[in-house]
Amino acid sequence: DAKTTQPTSMDCAEGRAANLPCNHSTISGNEYVYWYRQIHSQGPQYIIHGLKNNETNEMASLIITEDRKSSTLILPHATLRDTAVYYCIVNLRGNEKLTFGTGTRLTIIP
Amino acid sequence: EAQVTQNPRYLITVTGKKLTVTCSQNMNHEYMSWYRQDPGLGLRQIYYSMNVEVTDKGDVPEGYKVSRKEKRNFPLILESPSPNQTSLYFCASSLWGQVGTDTQYFGPGTRLTVL
Image 1 (cartoon, rainbow over the protein chains, first blue to last red):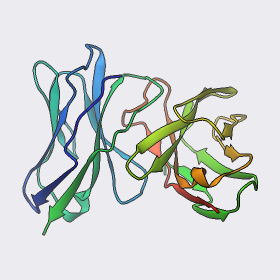
Image 2 (image 1 turned 45 degrees about the horizontal axis):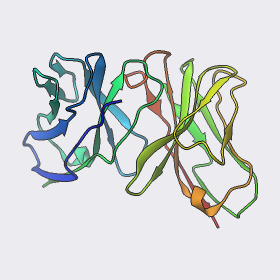
Image 3 (image 1 turned 60 degrees about the vertical axis):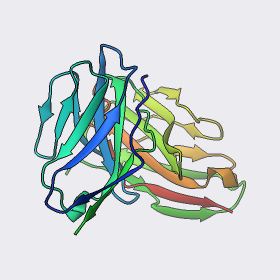
């Protein structure tokens, strides 16, 4: 599985868009990009995933660069409840193991 | 409500005393998995199961056992716990072939302390 690189921590003002970057320069053609978040020692929560097209759901948007070597998770209007650790994972679809790194600790500032 | 439940949520035990952490899901998922989470190390997979009676090792299986006799249950067994197994444990389940997607659910976690 391709490894990912994320900043250790980020801050974002409440109500602004939070943009979380992820580098995955060794991603292979059939590997997906997945994003999860974990709020204060709760179980990880699925956010979104994509292969090469940009994706949007009710929680977030995922922008994947054309060469697929990096992606950005966008929380359009961050709230205090979005404070969490965000994990970017690259994985073959259906692969039994998700390899979580250490993620980005996002803090939303009032 | 679709959910993964774990019991107990908190447990303090002593070295060598066998224990079992239960995991149950109500979504008829084929795939179930156990992770442990330690500071600075992220989540690491212990064991996973693709269906009843089918289990396999993850990244850190030493010191753990699992069984999958029923589709809904996937208990984690520590035959002789040691202090280095003090950790936060998560169970997860998913539809087969959908690991990582919006069908994957994690339990609330079990915080285990081994003295």
